[in-house]
Length: 207
Image 1 (cartoon, rainbow, N blue to C red):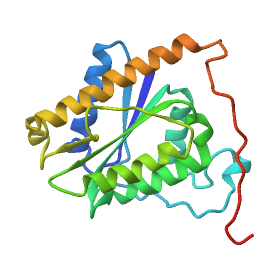
Image 2 (spheres, rainbow, N blue to C red; image 1 turned 90 degrees about the vertical axis):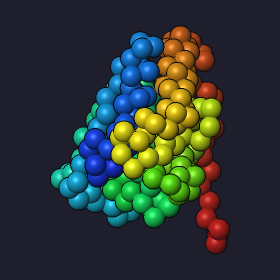
Image 3 (cartoon, one colour; image 1 turned 180 degrees about the vertical axis):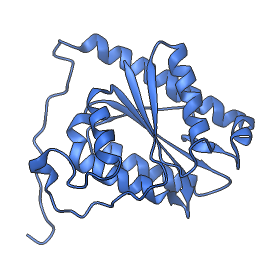
């Protein structure tokens, strides 16, 4: 079992990475592997809504990290989406990456557990958390719970570790993720592996 984690911060080893590392350590302690992918600082295309991915089975933009993440997502059993707060919203690169990942490769993520994690010096966390959770909620994913909203506070990696409640929240995410993965593993090959699929009815408000 493996959890794929995305670090959507422009700082490779900053506060978001620290939160994800706490999760990774607890997952390891409970027998679950993980990998942290850093989006980096290079430009990431926003989705242009062309729909080409539905035919190509990948995003039409092939010069950034998103298609590589999609390939890793195929084999992953669970996901953590981590981002810092920028102007009361997740960092822009994270939004651009997730828009394209979910639109072009959302079928790889369906019916798998996922959690969102945000970090901030002070505020904007709940608004950012809501934004990230909407990706999970629209894609038939299992939202992993914790003991509070999934956030850490601090202006450096060292300060994040001083946020004792934040640290326990991250550990609880990992523990609940490990539990869900083990339950899902037990269900493989049975009629409980996936729910009954309800076909989506797509309507527009003007017709």
